[in-house]
Image (cartoon, rainbow, N blue to C red; front, side, top):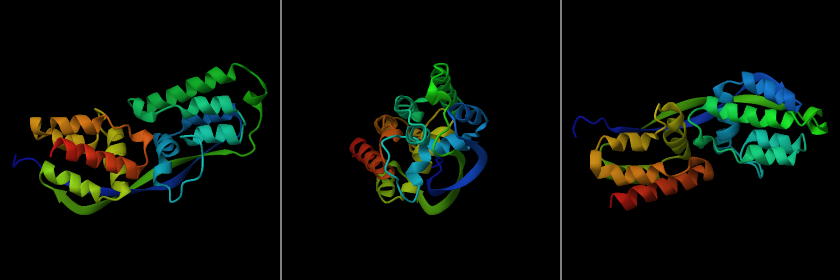
Length: 217
């Protein structure tokens, strides 16, 4: 096991960057979405987790919130809100699902499909800044205590963004533990079934720590 590199814990922040894309109608939203970069979907689905404040919203993503608050199309907002981005293999697949839902709504051709919203939807994109924490974990038993003390940005980077970066949609914790073979199989199983989109970052941290502690006690 001496050949296994230590786990280097990192932290991150998200900086908002304008894409220059805007929309004020449902069709404009669809057309702009076609041109939106991956970082824009990342921001509008996941960015709320790292924003300095959480605005009150009953919806899980910025698209659904805008459709409800600006276009006043609650039925469409609810369809957009139930989309869980962690269930899609990549951001292209997620974008295609959004476009399909908007297409299905636009063909109905009623007032709301062409009406102007009360405000514009401004497409932003996420630019991630990554920091080295200086914390290096050598053995699986040391992972849970380190994660328990980790900032929420570390959870976002290693558990959420990692699944986007990984060709096999794997979080960094599970990927590192896999190198230790059968002794970490139960831990990897428990961590992998945690749905990152259903919890806040602090809740995710607690769930990951619990899964590691219970499986490697």
